[in-house]
Length: 123
Image (cartoon, rainbow, N blue to C red; front, side, top):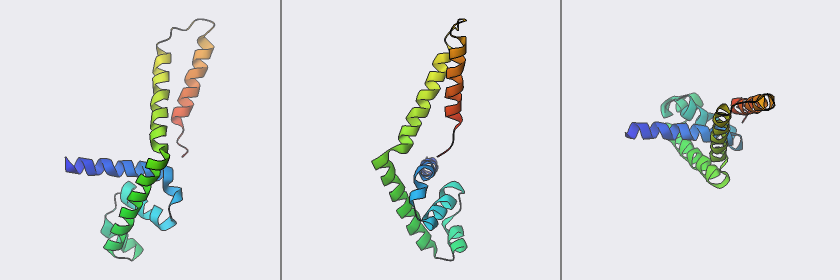
């Protein structure tokens, strides 16, 4: 249970990193990427940066707080998730519509737009 919660927290912080990573210092961003996304241990990162494990732990803790604060104040990740779920719901609703000769092309255009928006990963 505890291990799963830790993994979910890492996934959430990785998600925040995708949204707010550019607002971190370069070394903070790289340390966070290695820790949250690549699943490097603190010791492995410390060795790579030629610093102590404690230094990496402190950086990860600061980055975690910073990313969480950014999300609390800006809410971009939560907003993106709501928009994605809304687009998926719209797509599902469109699939239930029986097209007529007049609406067929409009429904297909709407499906295409929703599909294109859901496929975007430019963050």
